[in-house]
Length: 390
Image 1 (tube, one colour):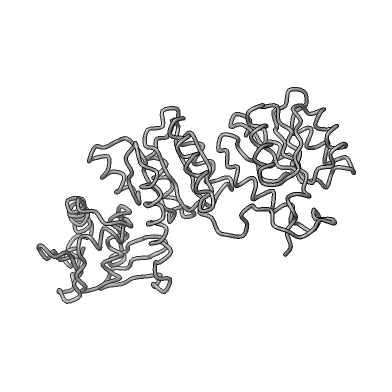
Image 2 (cartoon, one colour):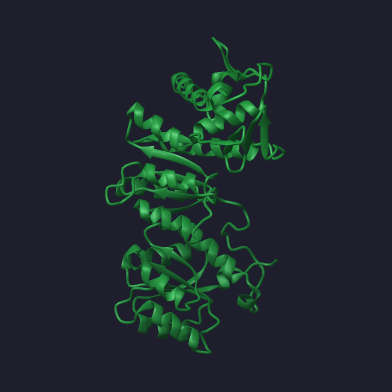
């Protein structure tokens, strides 16, 4: 399908915030769009007539006219009703947008200014302008905005403004690989997971969320307990260095644990490593792994032993999955840790020993099948006598 030439596309930015409005104006121009700005609703109405935009970026909080009311006015007027409109807002006014949506507002996706996903907005503009109803007599050329490539979508849960700025710079640099949404509280993060902002591929979660009713560990628990999100990657990114906290995070289902302050190249390597491992997971693995009365349901991570449900922590379930997928095979501590965490760690031995000990305990007599070969690793044996009870 042909794409519109940015040089022939006109975008009107209606926003009274001088910093954000100017930033969007400048970025759009840098990508070749013909751009016009208005700082009030009435000025925006006049510019629509004068400028004839192909698309409008509209802030919902304007000094003279409510942005949602202005959106409705544009959609009622036959001269402007076919112009696509992308709404922009601050966090404090998102409820107004949701309420208006319930009442029948039809708009392109709403962007939170605080997340500042400029590349995402530019990509969305290009997608909208490629629609046949928007192209008119436009010529075929490239806009210079990435399209079509699959980008990893990341949910960032972070309340520290300095760290938010680090993320903002990181995702601006690596925007070709990642899209991101920022949530400053645990409640906002869970709302983003529910309201269609996802689906997300990765969550980067701060543990201590001071202005939230839910801390990072509770957000992680909610992610793992929801069937729709239980398989997404989740990293704890925090200043908590206590061993008990690290263990609690992994037992709750964290895929990785990154200490603050972190180096951006380390974050990038961890993200790429975990995503690569997930993509390389064998798609041919059966839905149910079985061994002598024990069934492991891969998609739900449910474990049933002799008809009885066994509750395991996510890390224990991940270990059991590796053992069942490799019966009678010796697995080194490094290979096990890499399989469940996505990277090798020379200091993983103690944590792995604890997790395997807990797994054996939760499986009762059946757990005796998990053998320790001192100095070599672990394996699950199929030759031991079949246990008659848990």
